[in-house]
Image 1 (cartoon, rainbow, N blue to C red):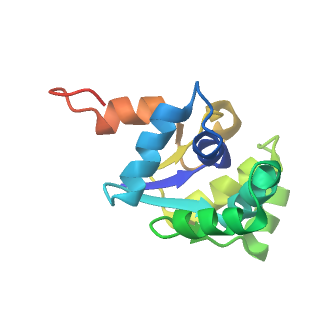
Image 2: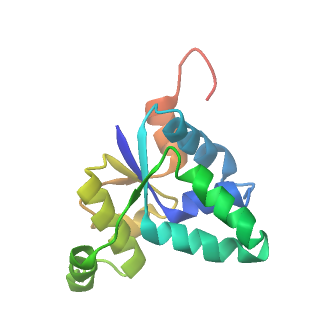
Length: 144
């Protein structure tokens, strides 16, 4: 199974956002352990680097991104994806449309995000980390 992880999922983990951390961490762990094939857009990398600037030093952020990219594919954003996103009036948020473009090219089965409403017009369906875990990673013999 192939997944595109939305930026908010990674930020949930990296900032240890209490309400969202657990299920997001399970999904990312599944990607890092090759249970599923995970990807993120190149835009997510720069967004994460910027968002974490107040919490982590430059070198700490570089190390974090290096570790993150060890087992998660980074998808390029090129002129074609940008043009497609600019011409797509179904999306309200340009960044989400770029995520959708990346997911489609990656042939992802799902976009993992907390903002599923932002992806109602995506060619790739969106699912929350919790719903994904319950649907695909839950073992009826054990807890998640």
